[in-house]
Amino acid sequence: RKEVEQDPGPFNVPEGATVAFNCTYSNSASQSFFWYRQDCRKEPKLLMSVYSSGNEDGRFTAQLNRASQYISLLIRDSKLSDSATYLCVVNGDSGAGSYQLTFGKGTKLSVIP
Amino acid sequence: EPEVTQTPSHQVTQMGQEVILRCVPISNHLYFYWYRQILGQKVEFLVSFYNNEISEKSEIFDDQFSVERPDGSNFTLKIRSTKLEDSAMYFCASTPRGTSGLEQFFGPGTRLTVL
Image (cartoon, rainbow over all chains, first blue to last red; front, top):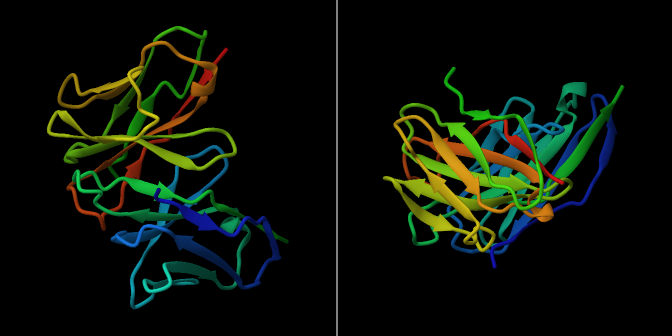
């Protein structure tokens, strides 16, 4: 069974703080990795893809460790607008050419003034 | 910017009734998906669709569910006889190609409430 596990949260942090989220996945055949952001009662939106070499997009840094099947997201200098649920997502061809996404339950972040 | 659209935004129905949820994927996309999210739970894959046929479906997608692309733009999810446990947000998504590294673009969702 393909599973993605995340920190349960919630994380309540002050503005300007650095916060890190962790995620593990069970399917070693997973091919692609993402962090999505979901605002309350809205659709998931791609925050960033995650590469083995690690990647950075402004205040956001994502890391992937394939050997440990572990993904992380670091948010620096948190803004009020970062308040959302962060979804760890993996994707891989199950053999049917479908590339379905498998989602974690998400970690809720609240940035406090 | 092109976007996936879904209608209706909220559907209320009685248990046992049929519902059709509608999606218009991004126009040059070829792969289509339905996901659902029960309140407070994770987003779950239901079905993928390519070249006018189902590519893959999850164990949730039983005989009560069906999908269709009736024309060049719409992609529908039908639930034949709704149950209370079908109450959820249903998200449609699309990608231009069948490659794992591509972003799946999600529509705003349809909130289905079964009474």
